[in-house]
Each structure stands twice: as structure tokens, then as C-alpha cells.
Length: 177
Image 1 (cartoon, rainbow, N blue to C red):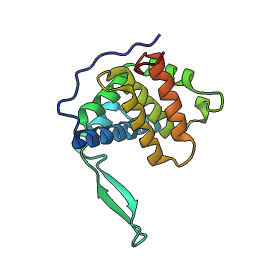
Image 2 (tube, one colour):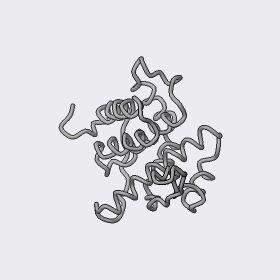
Image 3 (cartoon, rainbow, N blue to C red):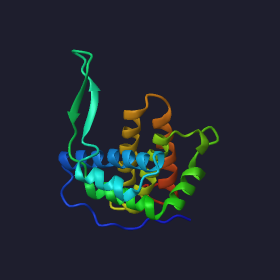
Image 4 (cartoon, rainbow, N blue to C red):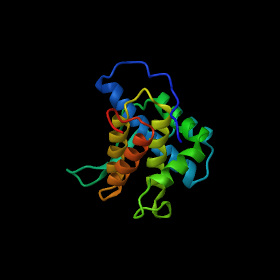
């Protein structure tokens, strides 16, 4: 049986800037977990790069007017959330991975998952476990949005289904068995 652990809530209200910073923190957590897994990097090194601004903070988009790639600055990430997710995964990696594998359907075995999908699921599961101050539905919705930024196909649905199963197993979905 998996059990969430309590964490101190982030300071600040639920205004748009705070929500955008949390979204950016989740995206950074996915990127960090990708780097840790794909390149076998130390979580400490990767976190230092993100928190110092050497990683993250910009995105490349296609300018529809010119068809050229342009760099845009993203809002600042909620570093507390980023660190909580990475440290939560690091402390409970075996549990997170076990929960992830058990929550996958037969059509999506772990061997089929790309590094980004694994990073999305690991980050979402870690947040559900360690940030009990954040409503589970908000966590799920945000990671589905991050998945949509990477994938136009069925992957966002997979992320939604797995995180929903995990949240239910944790008893984190309000009014749900």
C-alpha cells in the first residue's frame, strides 16, 4: 500500500502568477527527470542547473509569421515544487516505479514508454505522494497539459489514466472510492 506524505504548502495565493510558476515547475521537473534518466545524471547536478537558471526558462517555438524558430522566455518556475518532486522521486524511486508499472494498462507496458512519458508519470506520481497540499485533480490536469506539450497522440490520455489510478489508490480524489 502506498501512502502520501505531507509537505509544507507553498507560500503565496492561488493567483495566476503562482499557478503559472507551478506549471513551469512541473515542466522543469519532467525535464529534470528526463535528464537524470536518459543521461544518468545526478539529481543534485540537474537540480542545481534548473534552480540556477542554466537549464529551463526558455522554449523554442515556430513563429507563424516567419516560419522561423524563435526563443521565448518562460515564466519563472516554482523551485520549491520542482525540488519537492525531484527529491520525492529520489527518496521513493522504487515505490514510484512500482506504482507506475502496476498502474499501466496491458497496451502500455513500461518497455513501450519513451523517456519523456516515464518522466511525466514519475513526476506526477511523486507529486501525488509528497505534495498532499495540492489537490490531486490539479496535479493530474497539469501533467496532462505538460504531456500535450510534448505529444499530439494518445500519450496525454495515458498520463491522465495512470495518474488517476494512482490518485484513487492513494485516496486523493475527493468523493471518489
